[in-house]
Length: 87
Image 1 (cartoon, one colour):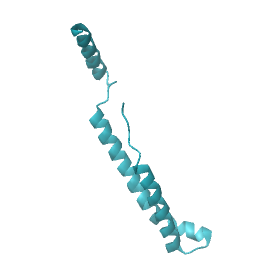
Image 2: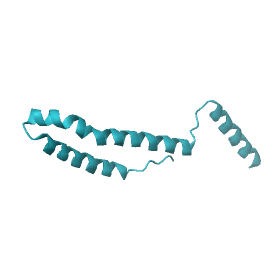
Image 3: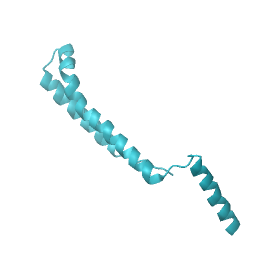
Image 4: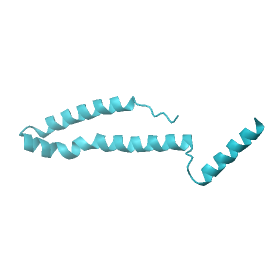
């Protein structure tokens, strides 16, 4: 068993050197950072597009922005429930 453990440890070291192994904490932090950036982009999106969409649809810009913000936040809430599994 000792020799098997040594061989596994050596293999892991080689994989790390070849950058084929990902640190779980680092991967989790990166996923969190990327998800936050995407969320922030979506939160600001209604304010950027509402006026043009309202003009094209022939409705009030404030109403359009309010609707978009509501639906975007609802969807982001659904996405927030997803948890990455790195196993």
